[in-house]
Length: 200
Image (cartoon, rainbow, N blue to C red; front, side):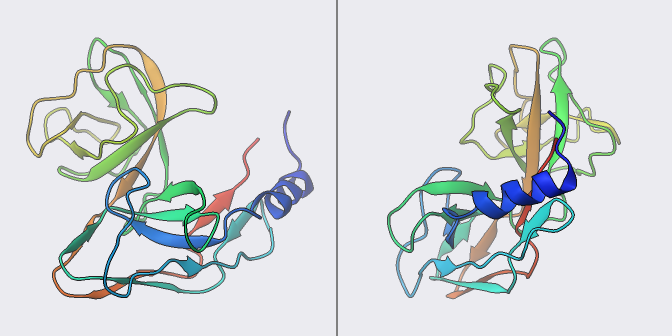
């Protein structure tokens, strides 16, 4: 059923109580950064407005040397707990939708904004599995081959062969920009960068 703005705001207000801490991930799994002074950071959410809630302050996550962070993770506790969400880092492309016919391995997404070698990960639409050939835990490379304003192909390696998707489907995708810390540093997540929208 379509939600009115107040209904979406109420859902957001009452639905984020388990999303308490933000950490850093080295894979698209619960594989979390470890070592050094690394620790998850508590997150406080803004009040729901215009069908959206955001983190209300800068989050600074200490990262040890020789670590590559591929995404942020939102957890239900300061230690242990559940991984509630995987959030892209370093990209203004928050989310896109794409359809893919298995015959072409070509993702169609109007004005997607991706470029060659961008890194993307996929999730199924609500309640749907990913089309066969795609994995939830793989961070893919966008290929130059087939890349247009409204379409793209992906590979498991930079410049590699196009991924063979073996079933038609629709997906959501996110671009993330992995960050390598040669020396100990801080992964910064700007105020308002963690968006939780409510859709109809």
